[in-house]
Image 1 (spheres, rainbow, N blue to C red):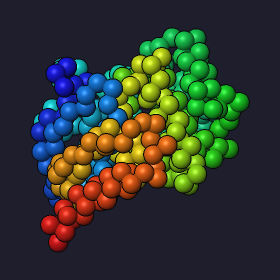
Image 2: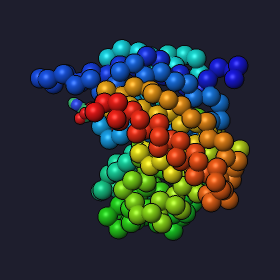
Image 3: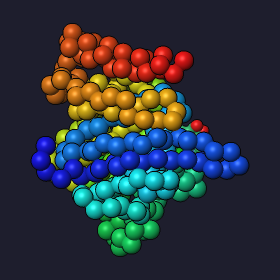
Amino acid sequence: MSATPILSIKDIVKIFRNGSEVKAIDDVSFDVNLNEFICIIGPSGCGKSTLLRIIAGLETATSGQILFQGQPKTQPTSKVTMVFQTFGLLPWKTAVENVELPMEVAGIEKAEAKARADRYLKMVGLGMFENAYPHDCSGGMRQRIGVARALALGPEVLLLDEPFSALDELTAKSLRILLLQIWGDPALPTNNFVMVTHNVEEAVMMADRIIVMSPRPGRVVGELKVPLPRPRFEHLRDPLFFDTVDKLMGMLSSNVEEQM
Ligand SMILES: Nc1ncnc2c1ncn2[C@@H]1O[C@H](COP(=O)(O)OP(=O)(O)O)[C@@H](O)[C@H]1O
Ligand SMILES: [Mg+2]
């Protein structure tokens, strides 16, 4: 692709130093092209969450660079927002207040923030639950609030850190469908997704391209373009789906064995 990638991850290294040294990420590079749905897959502890936090600007890299639309990105920005594995909601705020908060921090005027919170809570199916508190919501509802909160900032890139791993399979399935609708909706600015998962089927179901990481320290050990047409949910019983899952499983396990 010749256009500038929306996001370039360049030679990212992350070493945690608190007494001892832990190298979490070792020279990770890849691009996210315009309108792509990227999945990052790798074993537990290989640095996936750390990498997303670095892309979001919530953590600094030891070395390397993140480029957003070709420019170095060093700060959090509402153009690149994140959905967290365990939702990250404030328990003393209602659904609508949780969605409004980052917009207030970003300096969006109160009435506009309220209007956007209403719109995005409706979009994720929670129009009736604006005044509910997180503890009154199921896990699936909490993650819907998390998605509304991230989208309300109008990001061009949505980062998702294992967004379904704390949910039961049926709830996860309905959220996967919702996210694919949002990604494919031309009326929304949010058309670039980077989703971390450790679920092979989920990656094949959702991604255009899958980045495969090694066990810690996380390195990119392979990349797989998913050859299945969309909508994917019509193709989950195709032999090509199972072949792709097998291929990805092979890429993941060959590299785990290498380490042993
Ligand atoms: N704040 C931190 N301080 C020290 N080590 C950390 C910190 N955050 C993560 N790590 C370590 O970095 C490695 C990668 O963690 P993480 O990014 O959470 O992996 P993953 O999301 O792939 O499971 C792990 O060994 C973890 O213990
Ligand atoms: Mg993680």
